Amino acid sequence: LGRLGEAEAAYRSALALDPALYPCELNLAMLLAAQPERRGEAAQHVRRFLAGAPPGDPRAPEARAALARLSPDGRGGG
Image (tube, rainbow, N blue to C red):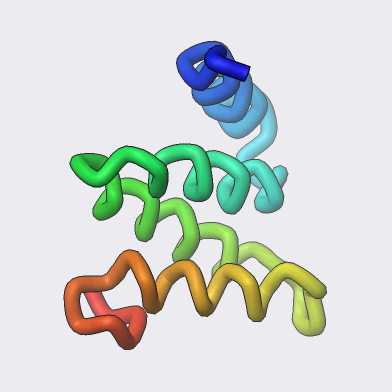
């Protein structure tokens, strides 16, 4: 609690070491989405998650819903 900067750094470090860690993309997106000024960046990470997630990933519906909330048009567009 209260260590968002450390959490963000950890997710970014993990992704730098292994970009295939697609779940980190969604976790980072959720962290960034809590900061209104970073919602666009959060949406980019959700898109990366969706691009890397295998078909049928159980978190994909959550990611698509988050992307819709983060997108200006409310439909997941950029």
